Amino acid sequence: MSQASSSSSAPSNRHVPPSDVRTISIAESGAAAECLARAFAEDDVARYFVDTSDTKSWSEQEKWELHVRIMRSIVEAHCLKGLALTIGPNYDCVALWMPPGKNMDDKLTMFSNELWTVKRKLPVEGQYRFKQEFLPLLHRSKAEVLGSLDDDSWYLVYIGSKPESRGKGYARRLIEHVTTQADDQGRVCYLESSNGANPKIYRKYGFETAKTIRLTRGPKPVEMEIMVRQPVPKTSFTNPPPDHPVAQTTRSIGVQK
Image (cartoon, rainbow, N blue to C red):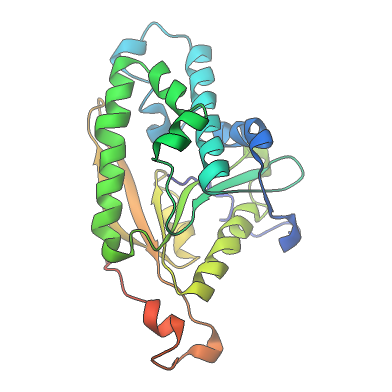
């Protein structure tokens, strides 16, 4: 679930050198989670699990604390099994990528971080939405869209910027840090956008909409756009020989027009 929050829609106010992109350690998960929690504070999908019929008596502070814990558990899972990146002087933007062949669904990862505890902290309806609707829908949709490339793709699970850090090119750097690798490897990139304003931003980086999915247990449907980016061969390989890795691994995924 990606939320660039328009951080890339405005021209960069200053140069952000590639060296500013760095990997997050699990000891930094709290600071990284704060960034994502703030970026997704009003996100319909993020609130889908805490704004339920059985949380009407909860205070906004209680909901916020659970929201932050969810984000921290997901950051920790990516530190263990994926790629957690940040940029800026104070965790201004954070991106969580799942590399090819990796996932955070195995039992070891579940029990090695807070994710298992957080799931149990969700209200009953929130747990049902998360485990019986949300996760199966994401897994099924990714497999349907990518087919045989499902386990051989880069998956942008989360990206978000602090409100005061938007418009500085941070999200662009964190996206291009991985899409450049994906191009070199001839691999597709995949994401779900939960913010209707963001697909036009992702299209600037080569992503195209493959399908729209919906969460339907709430008072109104919550939509997410699934987007896929095809690898872009280097200029020198515009017409690569048949035995070149780019020619062998670059395959087309159908997208909506």
